Image (tube, rainbow, N blue to C red; front, side, top):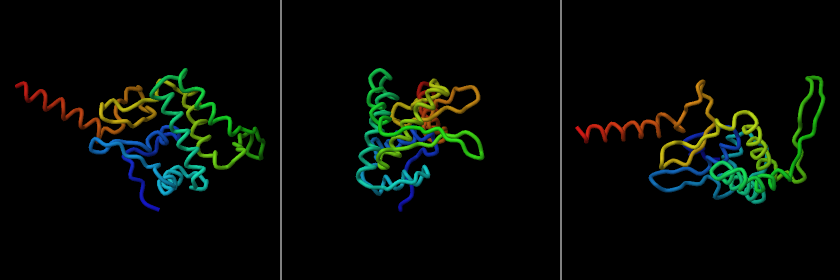
Length: 176
């Protein structure tokens, strides 16, 4: 399996799925063009699922649904997310460790897609205003703002934040 080429990883599962598309030198890159890329994404998120054509198809459906609600509107994209969520459910459990939840799927190939859609619901319930798209105009990455004051603007300060600062500096020096 090849290394994960994405510039931003480690975000919550739903946003990490959206971040399987990113910009490089003005062109959109897509990790999920084949099952090899799916295997990279599944491994990066420690998801125990087969990297097969059916799983890839379902994950792409979930990514499109999530993009519709994150980059569009809840009203427009809710039905698409619900269509993914219809393929699984949460079963309440009780174990020696206490109460818990166990996801169940009619078809295991829906597992990763369903988990990503479910994670988005959890983010909405936690802090919907912290679900963000990078403020750099040429970036399409998403992140969950965990900064203390909730003012994070960039997917990465080293990449997009630095480019923005460099652009502002160049503009100021050009004016002088």
